[in-house]
Structure formats: C-alpha cells, structure tokens
Amino acid sequence: MRFLILAFALGMAGCAVSELRPPAAERPVAAELPRFALEGRLQVRDGERTAAVGIDWQHEASRDDWLFTGPLGQGLARIEGDAAGARMTLADGRRSEAASAGELAESLFGVEAPFARLPRWVTARPDAGARVRELDVLGRLRSVVDQGWTIEYTEYADESPGSLPRKIDIHRGDTRLRLIVDAWNP
Image (tube, rainbow, N blue to C red):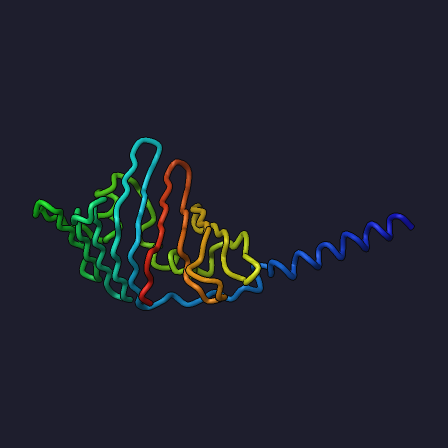
C-alpha cells in the first residue's frame, strides 16, 4: 500500500512540473526574425581577455550592420556584412575585410565566439537542432544548448509570452558573451 501511495504522489508531482515547464519537444521552433534592431551593451571574455562595448546592431535577412562604441559613446568600430563578405572600419580609419562579420568581430575582440549564430540566439529563436534545457512558466526559453554553446535567457523585456530577451548569457568553456539589450526595434 505504501508503494502505491508513493507512486501516486510521485506521479502527481511529475504532472505539476510538466504544467509549469512544458516539455521541450512540445515547443515549436520559431522562425528567425528577418529584421530587427537593438541597442545595448556587450561583454566578451575568455580566460585571459575581456572587452566591454556598447552595441547598436541593425540586422536584416541578408545584411548586418554593427556599431561598437566605448564607455563614453565614442565609436570604436563598425562592421558591415552581407553575402559578398564583411568590412570593418576602426575609429582611426583602418579598414579590414573578411568572409564574414563574425570573423571580423573575433579579430576585434580577440575571442572566438559564435557571432554568425547570434541573430537567432539573441531573439530566442534557436535552430531546430538546439536542445532546450529549460523554459519559464510562460513557455519562453530559459536555457538552451546549441552546438556546444549554452545560451541562458536571464531576463525578458516584459512579461508577455512573445517578449524578446533583455539579458542573455552565452558561454562555452572559458568564452562568455553577455548581452544586455536596452532597446529593441523589431
């Protein structure tokens, strides 16, 4: 009899948890936002280096424009990327080119990071292959693992189910990116 009572209690506890946090398999994969703009602050660090910058990012399906600024708002670098490649202009006028904006961002910060995946991650729309580890009570992402990177959504812009993230931590090993979004313009 005790076994039946214990099994019933555990079964009821399992039901309560699944009501609060829907299983990841039931969460549909959201389509990537074809266009957004955000302003915020980005910290990039690995075991040895840290960089903290302001960010103004304009994203379109075929084009990205990133402006990175220093603590007093002065421009540090602008990176523009499209299907033809990417170009970076530093504050002193020096220019660089690469195959992708991610390559230039990695050279700017000195940290290898998944910049090409950021459009999906910062909008809480990871690829279908990503593993959702945790959802909040509204069904929004809390923790995701995608290609070895852990993406944690620690705060959303508001309390609506479709709200975009405000604070995001992305990490793998010693490499960590922290983005705080001050303004979204989807």
